[in-house]
Image (cartoon, rainbow, N blue to C red; front, side):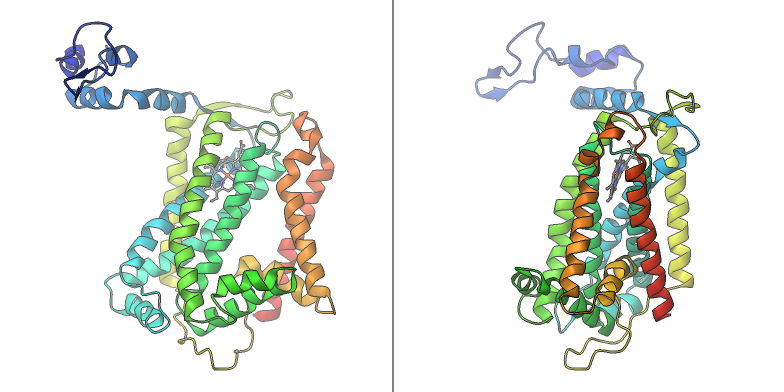
Length: 395
Ligand code: HEM
C-alpha cells in the first residue's frame, strides 16, 4: 500500500524547500516530512496512511515502547503494582467526573446531593461505591508499590527522581483521601476532619496553615468548599504533572532488576513491555476492577447522618485506615509536648524516606545495603503494628 503514502503526500512540491514556506501568507506543510516517516514503504491501510502523515512524530514513541523490556525473575510480580495504582487512579477520575454531575459542594446541599446520588440517580450508588472502594485500592496499591520498589532498591542510581516523584504522588494520594473524606458532609467525616485538621496546630506556623485549610477557625461550610476545590481541581492538576514525570522516567530509564540478579544469572529472560507486559497488566486491572465491583455490592460504604457542627462529637472517631499509624502515634504521645515530638518523629522519618536514594550509596554502587533494608522493614512493621492496634481498639 505504498501508494497510499504517496497519495497522502500528493500535492507536496518536490525536494528541499524551506520547511515552513508560506504562499502569500498561506501555510504550506513541510515538504520533506515523508522522509521522516520510517513506515513510508510499509503495508498500511489508507486510514493508517492518513494518520501516519499527520502523526509521524509519534511513531518513534511507539517504537520506543516496543523496545522496552521487563526482566523476568522470581520477584517480577511486584512490577504490576505501579500499573495497578495507575489503573485505580483512572477509575477515580472517571467515577469522580460522573459524581460531579450531581454533587453540590455547599454546607446546605452536600449531604442531600450525596443521598440523592445514592438513592435516586440510576446506578449512582454503584458509581459512588466504586469511587470509595477504588480510592482505598489506589492507596493500598501505592503502599505496596512503594515498599516493593524500596525492597528491590529500584530507587538506586539513576532512578532517584523516580523515587522522589513517586513519593510526591504518594503524599498527593493521601491528600486526595483526606480532602474527599469530608465531601459527603456526614457526622463521621465532619468530626474526623475536625480532629485531623487540629493536628498541625502544635507545630510552629501550624495554626496559620490550619486556618487556610479550614477557611477559618473551625471546620465549616467554608472548609467543605476548600476541600472540594482541592479534591477536584488542585490535587488532580498537580498529580497529573508529577505522574507524567514519573511515567516518563519509567519509560526512559526502563525497569530495574534487584541488585546482583544479572551477575548471578537469576534473570530468566526479558519480556516486551509492549504488548506482552501491558496485556498482562490489563488482566490484573480487570481482576482489580471485578474485586471492587463485588466489594461495592456486598460491602457498601455507609451514608451516615448529616453533619451537625453543634452536636457533640460521637465516640470512637477515627480517620481512614491509611492515617491510623499517625493517629495512634499521637495518642501514644499524649504527655506534655508529646504531640509535637510525634510530629517531629514522623516528619523526620518521611524526610529520611524520601532522601533514601541519595543516602544509600552502597545500592548505587550495586552493592547490598542491609542497613536500608532494615530501615524499610522497621517502618513497614511499625505501620502494620500501629494499624492493627487501631483495629483492635476500635472494632
Ligand atoms: C499515584 C501513584 C503512583 C503511580 C500511578 C505509579 C506508577 C508507576 C508505574 C506504572 C511504574 C512502572 C511499573 C512498575 O515498576 O510498577 C512505576 C515504577 C516506579 N515507581 Fe511508581 N507510581 C506511583 C507511586 C510511587 C511511589 C509512592 C513510589 C515510591 C516512593 C514510586 C516509585 C517508583 C519506582 C522507584 C519505580 C521504578 C521501578 C523499577 O524500575 O523497577 N512510585 N510507577
